[in-house]
Length: 450
Image (cartoon, rainbow, N blue to C red; front, side, top):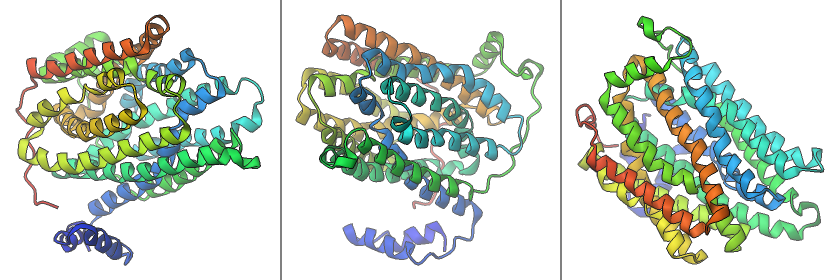
């Protein structure tokens, strides 16, 4: 049975009947005979189990705050991993490009990062003092192997998934993880609140149990990733200027000069995202310390946000096929800048739940269109290096932004800083309209609907 035939059998079933039929057919465990479809299927299953860890990770900053982490430490939690990414992404990508069999390096680095969450679960038992600092530094350390994984995973996905299927597969993976995280974060939030009444599960044991469950899901996810059959990557003989292990500034400039549209999308995105990075660590501080949000509210907020993501991906994957990547991006990206404005101008916990849903109806339109345009703008033989350079530029901004945002929040009211971040994000969104990326090569390949 193929994925296409599976979807064909449930396509015309209305409403809940469609999902019931999907579950019934899946439980038959009929084999998938095509290797590409098996790979896609494993990627769907592994991201479901990975969502257990993602749900636990949604409470990382809240855990640190409740342990007594300062504003500066929460800023470090956002900024220092980005600094590591700046330093490691390009060397990691270029190292992986020298390997024809990259999967062991990619999966191995991911598993090492996930082991860190196993250590996070037992850390309060191991360290009696400075627990907040220990948690923050452990989460920062986890970002090192995560960076190596990130350098290889996006190019690997491009190799595994045919271009015509990328938007569908990326959307489906996002829907799966969002649906799972939506349920689990709500349950986790309730657990964190009610467990305080259980003697053996009082804080921080309630968080430890949550992280243990998340780590279990990560182990199962890694097992399914090992089932993915990764084709050998062709090791490209590079031009002389690309042979060094670490590209110089002149070499990066040469790459930019060869691809003007890549420069535009990099600069536009840097400014657009900088507004979000500036205020990123401020949200949890604002919610918990100023608006007195409970763990249950944090879980509910994450749940509703993921419901918005699910609906958003379901809508945008259809609209993008009608609009094309370029038009979809131009429509969605100005709306994606509104969240900071809404939180600042309407600082009510109930209203913020609504803003989270609304913004996550829009964000999938940006993510799907932007990511597919970016992949198209990267030459096939140097995709890992181009994506690493792009990610390094983004992470440089992600390192600086939270530091500035936290510093500003010490001087000005957080709501004012949120407005500044929203203004920068909106300006970046407008740049996509002013300095447009060339539409050549970014149309959607035609395929049968599935």
